[in-house]
Every structure is written in structure tokens, then in C-alpha cells.
Image (cartoon, rainbow over all chains, first blue to last red; front, side, top):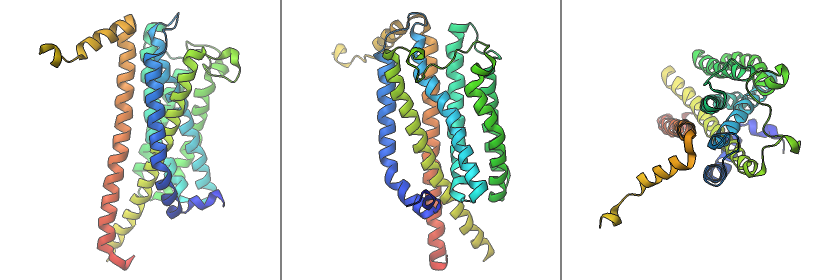
Length: 242
Length: 67
């Protein structure tokens, strides 16, 4: 069976209906376990004190803010190349979720930065590129809503998504590219020496899994809604024409 | 009797503030803002899903077998 079969809306609706309850339950389990574990059962950091607990929200949200845009990019490319409507609708569905994660990363970052850096905000490369990514999310959502012809909207938002991908990548690698600013490098790495201590790392991984699963769950729910909304639009148009 | 019906919430809040120490406001602020945003996006997604599903069912019923 080819993955392109899921470009059929009927097939997508059937399959997503089957997996959604499991995904939602798993997302809730991971998020509740990870956050309670991290908040109540991990020690203070010797330098950052109790603010280290913000890591369980900040890092997964920031990761997913970037990954959501990458997912939108892939879906947009599929739309531009193969013209599968479900992929365009999936990109549209992911944008508000990515926007929420970006906002969480910015807010928790400000709360973390204030005691650790002495400021809520700095025009640091990573923070600035993240703010621009946030604005791109807003622009992307606004563009979808502004154009009535859904195919034209999908075309234009796909192009916007490709442009915004530059800032998604910059957000991820800004610290490496410019090697300046207040933000530190990656907290998680396959290179063991760079990782945070295991006592923080394990609950952090559970939280990351929770955020990934929550993202997938919400995107599936919202894509299903977009498919239904398009069908509804089609029916209402027919009613008006009769 | 008072002890039986006493709500442990103020005790928990005191414990929480002591547990988080001098950064309690920042940590609790982060968690509250994030949880509000997460609940908002989940609620909005489910609310719009239910509303669209209902509207589609009504439109399909009106259309009958014509589509």
C-alpha cells in the first residue's frame, strides 16, 4: 500500500478516526507523566535553582514550533508538486498548533530569562529568529483566511511557508551560526557530553514525546475539520446555486 | 469538624512556594501560561471540529441524495 493512498480524503478520515483515540490517550499520558515527574520529582539545578523546571515546557515547545513549520513545509511541497488537497489542508491545520507552541516557547523563555539573564527579552539571534518565526505563523494563518479561492490560498501559503523555512532553520541553528547572544547551545544531543544530567533528561524526553503526540493528535483533528469544512463549503455553494 | 472540612489548598500553595523558592513566580507563571495556551488550542480545535461536523451533517441531510 502506498502512502499516497492517504491523499484520498475518505481514506484519511477512516484511518485517522481509528488512530485518534490512541494518540490522544498516549499524548495525555506522556504529558501528565512528564510534567508531574519533572515538576515534583526532580531536584533544583545547582546554578539555576527551581527555574530548571521550565525546561519541561520550553524545550519541547521550541522543538515542536520549529518541527511544525518543517511539517508544514513538507505538506506544502507535496501540494505544490502533486496537488493533493489533504496535504494543503494538513499544512493549514498545523499552523495554529505551531503558533501556540511558538508562543509557549517565547513566554516560558521570557520567564526563564528574567532570573537567569536579568532580562525578559534580548535581541539575541535565536530569540529574534524565533520572534520572526512567530510573525510568519501569524502571516501564514492570515493569508489562508484572506483568500477565498482555496487552491490559490494553498499555492500562496505554500510559497510563504518556503520563505519562512529560512527562519525556522535559523531559529534552530542561530546559536551555531552566529556564536553570540545569551542563549546557550543545544540542551539535548546524541553526543552524551552535551546533554543535561540524566535526572532532568529522562522526564524531558517524556515531555518531548508528549508534545510530539499532542501535535500529531491536534493536526489530525484539525485536518479532519478542514476536510469537513471544505465539503460543507461545497454543499452550501450547491444550495445557493439551486 | 473544622479539620475534616478544611481544604488543604492553602497548605499546598504554601508548600509549593517554599518548594520552588525565590523563583516560584517565574516557574508558576511559565506553567500557568503554557497550560492556559495548551488548553485553549485543544478546546478551540475540539469546539470547531464539533461545530463543523454538526453543520456538515445538517447540510448533507438537506441535500439528501442529491450529492
